[in-house]
Image 1 (cartoon, rainbow, N blue to C red):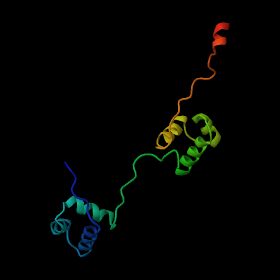
Image 2 (cartoon, one colour; image 1 turned 120 degrees about the vertical axis):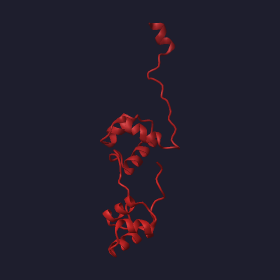
Image 3 (tube, rainbow, N blue to C red; image 1 turned 90 degrees about the horizontal axis):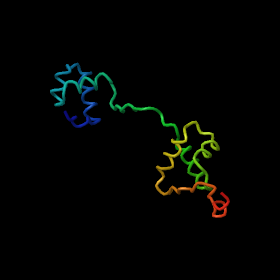
Image 4 (cartoon, rainbow, N blue to C red; image 1 turned 180 degrees about the vertical axis):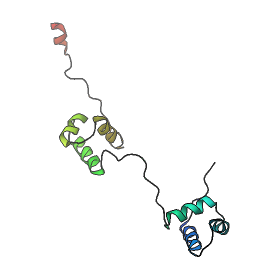
Length: 125
């Protein structure tokens, strides 16, 4: 079932003032023309503004870490493991790679496997 339109600050304040005036929850919901449950939540919280809860865990990298990673990559051709060790980051290598993939102006360059076998090396085999 779809959610209704969110409450405005005026509606929240109106619900709280009606409750302080001594009206019941059903009378408030009839006056505001909102569901009883909505009015109950506003009264229970008791605040004019309600911020939504932050879901999920904390990010492993801060904005500062992101900037440090990008700055280290721009300095030269260094792998992600070397960057992680150099900056002493408390995350895995994949997290550093993910941070670099989110930078739109940074292009990934596939480095060839080194050392390459030269023709005179193949003849020596």
